[in-house]
Length: 84
Image (cartoon, rainbow, N blue to C red; front, side, top):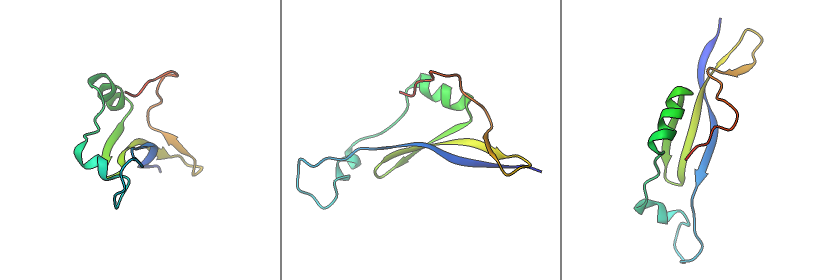
């Protein structure tokens, strides 16, 4: 029997040290992180999920655990896939 789970593929963090503020991530409250239309299509095809966070964003990929407790991606992307 296998289980379907989401694992973190990568995360994005944007910070600054130009202004002296309580949090170096404060700049993100005025910014919106979003994938391009093409990147959204790539992530949908790869069964991935884009989640904005206070520090930037996290991208998760859907995977499963096979009978030997090995975590495998549900869909493998072609080499050279570019996230924009």
